[in-house]
Amino acid sequence: MTVEDIAVLAGAGLVALATARVGPATDAAPHRRIPSLYADPASWLVLEAVDELWTACPDAVRAAPETTAMVLVSTYSTIDTMSAIARAVPGGRLSPLRFAGASASGPVSLVCQVHRFRGPTLVFTTAPEQGCPAALTMARHWLRTGAASQVVVAVHDHDSLRGHEVRCVVVGAAPDPHPSGGPR
Image (cartoon, rainbow, N blue to C red; front, side, top):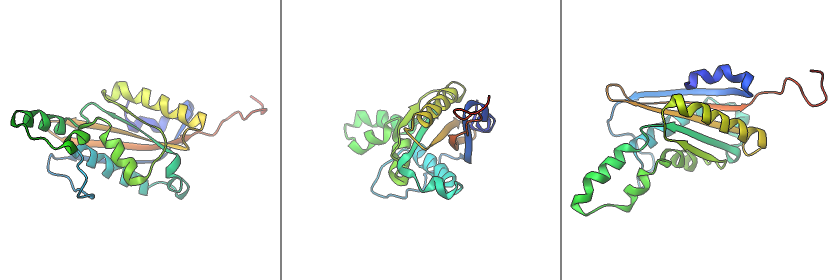
């Protein structure tokens, strides 16, 4: 399942409010908007995708970042930084900032910091085919329980030939076709 499939999930209780796709990006150094903050290149790409997504959202969605949740599905995650740390270990000099940037949740943390999302977050470090159904289930749960008013679902893929790509969608709860007390 991919982000493109989310649009057909209205029967599953979700509705797409906006979508975005960024990439494929080369492995060139990403644009760093916060010079003093270290983040993995994948984190900057996820942020770029959510930036694009967020500007495409309706005003009512953008007005509620404090109730926006986020789920990321990525097999690749911050492996560039993890690999750089592993290569630097024999030299004995490592910046503690590199460890923070290597966290699998680093991309979500950067997005939440910049966009001020304060809803729940989750990272699935698995292939999109396995992670997307679980991510959508979690999004639906957060929406139904009121833990979030909308959920950003992002999928980060990496292909050694094409580079990195991020697809994302903001989902909201689909209107209930059978409101309480209404005819069925």
